[in-house]
Image 1 (cartoon, one colour):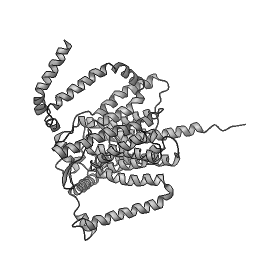
Image 2 (spheres, rainbow, N blue to C red; image 1 turned 45 degrees about the horizontal axis):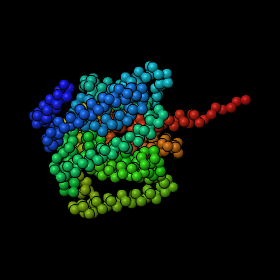
Image 3 (spheres, rainbow, N blue to C red; image 1 turned 180 degrees about the horizontal axis):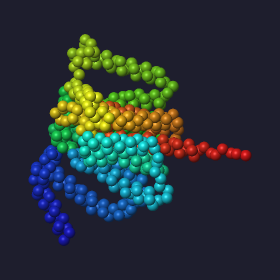
Image 4 (cartoon, rainbow, N blue to C red; image 1 turned 180 degrees about the vertical axis):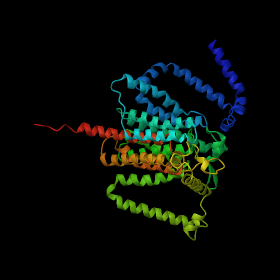
Length: 481
């Protein structure tokens, strides 16, 4: 009877597939390019679910008991698929966070060894949450407040999980491992676009329109894998790139993968990162690579900096002298700035003027309403996180937001001064480059809260907490007589 029922359901699904993809899922054009893609995907998902039911009870018991082992890796896994919920109320990272909050609270009440990690970030997050609440007086958007508060919760859970034994190395390892399938999918997206003019992406068609750029005379798709945008994929792949390269430079690749597999991973990550065409990430990679090399060979800092400066000057001179139409002066190049860059500057300028001369200088205009300072046809706000946080949360919110970044920078500097050996050395050395990546992302994109930047803050704070704990453990009590 069950087999008959399942056959009837799957048969009806196959028969109605054209109707469903045409009318109910019209915002997902990639379903139209592959016949019966919806029914095949649902059938495979159902088969996987039935197979998993056999192993689900013991697995669920293990996850509930040792939630702190699984939350960081599951968060990274869900981040790979945040594009599946583009335009929806909840994305996978929010679902997994909501699922683990009660597990953490229950462990806090039941387990005697469970403690809350005290960190200055918690205090700054509470202060920024107050600014978020105050901004609701200008524009009452409780849903936006809750979604913004999510990043503080993610940081809190990750810090309390990553400080546990062997969780941080596992988190870093899975970060690199999960980058490989996303990179492969990104390469496949570009291949299908160039060969069939079809886009494989879960995000709606109106969002896909802004993911094209013309390069080498050819319209290129800025790959995003299963993520909500190419920016998320670029930031994630660049972070995995720095961790992998740092492990190779400090000869600690065994902490991630075997050397040959790590090199294979880089062979997929690098071209996929290039195909995102994310200029802020490109800039972050350039400066981060220089910083990573300086940290690896500090005795050669002067020569490396000199060579890097000469290469930069040579590249600038070449760009000015060789590109047609730019042979006179650098002013010509600035005068003919790309339209997208001019638009970005205009958005930032309008927001600054509106913030300084408007009535919301102290409290901000409200969460997710920064677009009201601009006159953009798509409703875009400023493309700078610091400008946008000032416009939406006021000058007090801006001060707290800058303090959070300042604390993260101070932690990274302190870690690189204190840590000179140990299994986490390559992670510590990669952190300055990663911090530059997220900083450039914040400076050139209008998202002052980000589902990946805050986990990187949590990783930094967890490493600092572990270093302090080891320092206390190795410092014996002073003998008295």
